[in-house]
Image 1: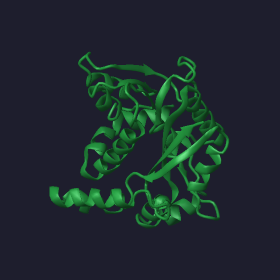
Image 2 (image 1 turned 120 degrees about the horizontal axis):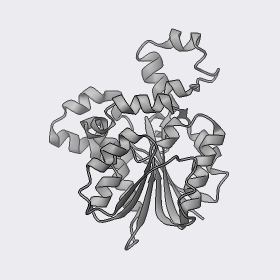
Image 3 (image 1 turned 120 degrees about the vertical axis):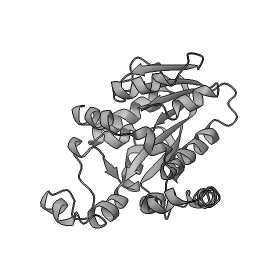
Image 4 (image 1 turned 90 degrees about the horizontal axis):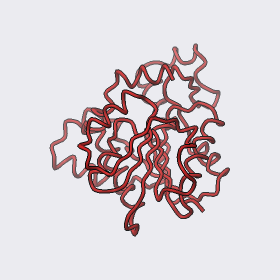
Length: 260
């Protein structure tokens, strides 16, 4: 856990989601969270890997019952600092790979909006998904976020002139799939990798969404937009974020599953 703790102890994840370009991912994720809760009168939500509480706290302040599980103590402290004690939010330090403290079939919506970024083996990913599926009620939704492979090849390998470095370090497979280790912090996948994980569990996909789409390719332009132009950009993004021909080019995706 050392690399992960060091990263989140120093990285301003809250600031990223509050930046104009980060708002696209946040607004899109919230849009599909709300869509997943439609028709449920008193939903129970679990967020696994809640970070600093950007989603959990916002939902709890709307009166929704939320259980937030977070691994990194620094993040958990920041999350708790946003609460005034009136919110229906329970914050717990815990690991996405072992949620034994939580009951089976307990939640209407389970969210894994960060853990898959930092799990490096198929076995770890399957364990995290298994736990998320276990604690979700039949018919409930499971939202899983992933970091995608191709934006890193395009932006980091070629865009930042790191080709020689990554080739010498054997960080790419012959078919250009990035090879990550814990020191690299982020695990990168393709849509077929996500499909292979889902196939193990009693779930069906509702949607696979590009949560930031082209936004991170043009951060400077997005951050410089006036309010009206940014509103139009978000509207355009919403119009195309479910197009499957564009999914793999998004930095982040959101897999929306239904437990059977």
